[in-house]
Image (cartoon, rainbow, N blue to C red; front, side):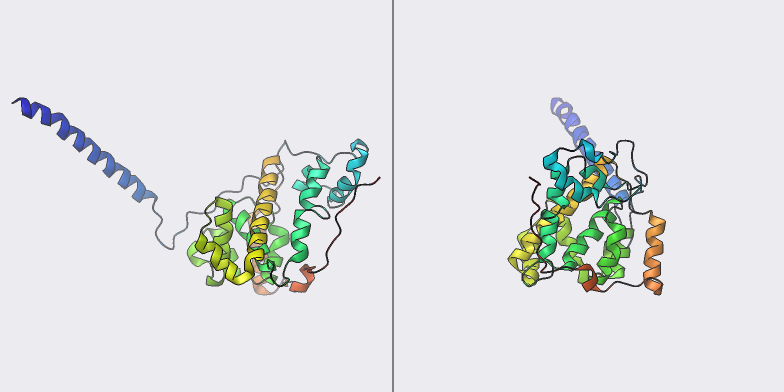
Length: 269
């Protein structure tokens, strides 16, 4: 009789564990996405500049040693601009180190598409993957034409937009996989070696630099509250215009400057 009293709590405990596992399995099953189905793109929440978005500083407020850097950044800011370039100008030397003459982006682009270096294709697959994965459409307006000219398939751009990885064109899967592996901290030897066979070791290292640089641009703009480059409806319209021929894909040579090495900017004396 005493043994029966001991077993009853054990049986109850095992039964409770079984019920819990069944509940978890049911919950997981309800979230499972069947192959070919999309979870749906994240809603755009940043079409307008946030209240925190900085204003372009007056040139008179900038120290003498920072003026060359400020002028480089400010020259890229258009009237009414609400892009993250405005925020870059608040800390000019930092902004120029990232995006100015001789900065990281400038240096990487100098070597783009030269033998043994990262390709224009690699650059543009980053510009498509990061914003379309996140739903924050920075980088999109300017770089979609460049992506098509660099050889990224329209099918892939639409698949990324719709969060349909099953529809990414086979030619583009490796590039998207590499970008995500760097962004998400999920790099493996296999992913690395597969890319290395295409663009060499220096090319792969440059690719990593560029993924992290563009993620910096992307997340910086998001953090400071910069406006999206375009609404989803406008992006769809752009893609339709490319598909119908109403908008022409620019020739690749028009968006490259390979081999034109730029000097590092020097501060005025």
